[in-house]
Length: 250
View 1 (cartoon, rainbow, N blue to C red):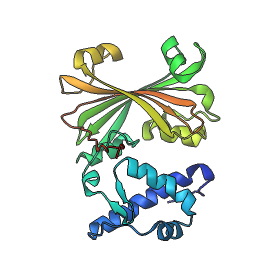
View 2 (cartoon, rainbow, N blue to C red; view 1 turned 180 degrees about the horizontal axis):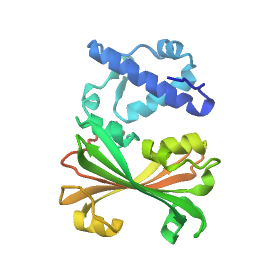
View 3 (spheres, helix red, strand yellow; view 1 turned 120 degrees about the vertical axis):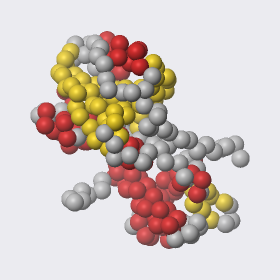
View 4 (tube, helix red, strand yellow; view 1 turned 30 degrees about the vertical axis):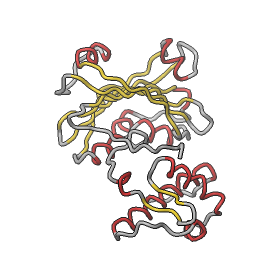
């Protein structure tokens, strides 16, 4: 695997990944108390000031518990959550966490002028060129997710061919061919009948459910500029989400 240098924009992401690795390592050994801030900062090669925001974020998510005068502890209840609705993870990993083997096909890939709705979501002008992609994702060979997304063609400094789109997801392609990485997203959740889904898409799918869970999201880069407008439709018989919530008033 080729390791890329960590730039300043990705230090927090790298620290988080290393913290999660440390948590998994200690959890397997039955050790619930994490090292001190200074010990972790030394281990990761960063300052305590750089580490603290990441710890605060993970404490806010309930992954760790910070007890004044006692230290920082792993929260085993939060670790029991397989798929956290708050996480940004790719669909293949999501399917794996639900206990299935993932695979996918690209149903369609089109370049088209942006309609009013797409233009508004992506902060571009109506008529500007966009890519629309639709992926079909499977859990153990059974369709589990239909995902459609739009992104501006003008983001790309090199246009990938269809083979690239078929083998990768939009976020991976944007990072490699546009130099833009998704950092956050805003999500709206609703239920939808399979009939309404097929009407929305304009064609039928192989989903076996009678209704789907829709996650309608806009992904943003670190400058809060929209990258992708996506709509993912989940068969909740195969894919389910959990939340671990914390009372931040205490």
